[in-house]
Amino acid sequence: MFRFKPAAAAQAARRAVPSLGLAAALLATTLGAPGPALAQAPVIRDHRMGGPPVARVQVIMHSVKIHDDRDGRFAGEGEFDFWYTLVCAKVTDPCLGHDEIFLDGYGKQFGAGSGETYDLKQTTLPVDGTVTQHYDASAATGYPLYPGHNYRLRWGMEERDAVSNPENMGDFRHHMTPENNWGIGTFTTRSVRNDGKPGDFELTYEVRPLTLPDLRPGGITIADLPGSTKKHVCVGIQNVETGQSSPSEVLLRVDGSVPSDARATVPAMAPGTGTQVCIDTELPDSGQHKLEAIVDPGYAIVEYNEANNVLEQSYVPAPKSGGSPKPTAPLDPAASTLPTAGRGEAQADLTVTAITVNGQAPDGKSDCKDGKNTVAIVVKNAGTVKAGGFAVRLDADGDEVSVEAVDGLEAGKEREVRFEEVKLKKGEHTLAATVDSKKTVAESNEENNDRQVTARCQGDN
Image 1 (tube, one colour):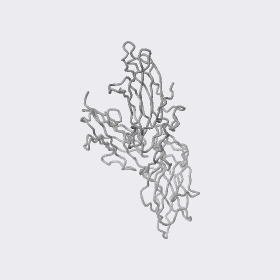
Image 2 (cartoon, rainbow, N blue to C red):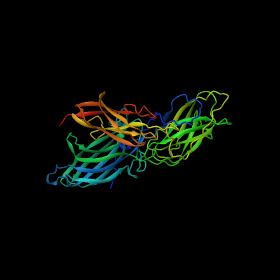
Image 3 (cartoon, rainbow, N blue to C red):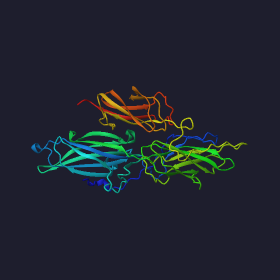
């Protein structure tokens, strides 16, 4: 049975996290009719004071193997205390010293002999009722990860039995940063003792994105309404993550104020789909103004990323003329998908979500070996239509290593592209991945095709 294991840092007050403006060029749906000018590209940002979480994850512990053999004929016998903490710090001081904040902790006691593997039965953390009051985590909402911070998982173990004093079996750390895609993946890691020698346990664990929706507003389009001073304002909305969303709300803010008729209901949305929601409201008839489309303004829906719910666009009314553009009928608000490319602006959006070296997300310490390594690049199509064939390029320290071809990728899906026998020398290296390196796919966002990590290679032991 899990039990809470306190730490001194747990008494520290939870640090306020700074807000972060996130920019993204999302899908811009069009009505096909001329309308007022949009003075600049849309910007996605958050609207919660202090900054909402940009990701939510679970930690799953699968099994632990015991390597303890320091007790002679009593090797491995007795009771082991397994503990876990999650800590975070500002990016300027990544989880070091006094800047470390204790977020969560658990212990587990069990008996196992040296060489035995103990099945942890896919224990999923957090567990409801055991988290600290300083961190808003639960089994339903996962661990929220905030902008401007790095995170670290830490595991350790002690042995206590009748024939020896408590023995430190070592510990290890798993780093979670925006640069390594929050450390997401499955890993098997052996602990390290204080003297630098291999520790006495080996843990298989997983950091997994929580299955949740993620609603993002797309482009705002505006058309005239014949015989009316109001405008027909439509907002494209996507659910870009793996969870089903329930009905929500979208509102339009004009220069910081929300007109009384500028709210509409967003239908429930399946993963990887989108829709268009329209509002008829008054807009200024001259000058430059700021429009904001806000999805789920009251945070009624728990989302994987809460920091991309607001779309900002500048708005300049069209000059008055003798004629009025003929409006196009709005899309059915209950539609579950965006229009096809021939009727709107639905496109693919290829991104690099992770780079791993020899099966692990690099943390700049001991990530690779002097010699041949395997580098894997995880590519995601975050758009709303299938991407055709494209290329993925791997560079090391600015030089091209190899290019791999991918025959296509469905909307909302991920694919791992592996580069075998990548030769790296001892020392630090910058690995860079580029998806659609030959620019063969039309994308809604051409600025998010790259990711790089730093990996440090050790010499052969």
